[in-house]
Image 1 (cartoon, rainbow over the protein chains, first blue to last red):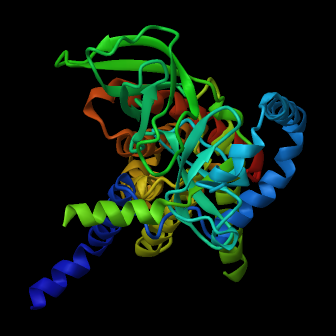
Image 2 (image 1 turned 180 degrees about the vertical axis):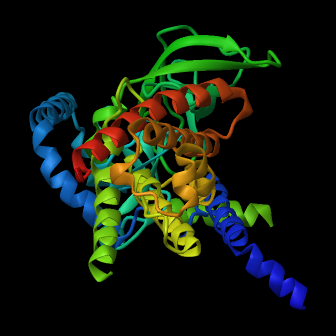
Length: 270
Length: 168
């Protein structure tokens, strides 16, 4: 007993180092898996407050470009509204709302790490929940990960653990989006069957196969295709429509039917 | 004694805020950021309790992780350089450290740069190894370590020149 105590006292620095180092490794590997980083995430009162204050100042510097983006989007939506002929006789039949949209502000953007997270200024007080989709006017941004009262973290598509289902707009062949961490405007689409006719310049959109994003939200265009190591699947490089480096105004998407879909799928698994 | 403690508490908070608000968003050439918060670990006085020092360094790293959603990579890197620091102090400052009073304000400039450089590269190597954690991208990791490391060393040496008290 005496010897054990002596050993601990002699090596107390090393033991403390070992303990703290393993704790930080534990935290690190917890963030690698989905929704597991319970303690260390920036959706809380303190970090959210600091980023909010910093963003209040820095938001002024790109007001002009953001206004132009919003004006462009308004133009597109106006064109849609005034050029769509609505048949009032049949319209009443399909008024159910499947997706609820909400606006949010990105107060922290990150795109240089290999696992990027964004922070938005809406939280559970604005009825944001886990697994809501996040898009901008130009395309998909990510999925909500953690939610606090007034803030939420978003797993960016520029994150090695992000897997969003996407498809070729032309032919409906689908695959999942991954990111190899190299460039902030190129992501990869994998698991697309070899027989799918993929050409440079094709448009990639969300597939609507998950209950997070609706169908046909734009993502990007194909810039390069190769076959993977087993030569069974395409590996497609996609140039994003979004400029991930200057995001500001985004929309969160809530799927109203999600509970029902989830209950049904869980029933199937039993 | 109390005013010295206050000084280090202020320095801790200031470095964390500066790091997360300013230096994490520099993105020089697309991806190079300096990690100046390790200045706290590097220039912490040498005659204090090592246990306390390792503990503080861990919480410094954890504070940065909290802000940047990076799990525990900064905490792991900071606690490692805090533990390894005495060896590097001995290597860089030699006899001066043996007599247990290294005052960073009036040490030899060359020795100080070597000391800062070694700790910075070890910190960055652990940081990026944990962040990327992929054996097929070792080259990218080393490249990031080298460039970010040079940037960090430049910033830390500059800051230490600007804020050091001339005692001559």
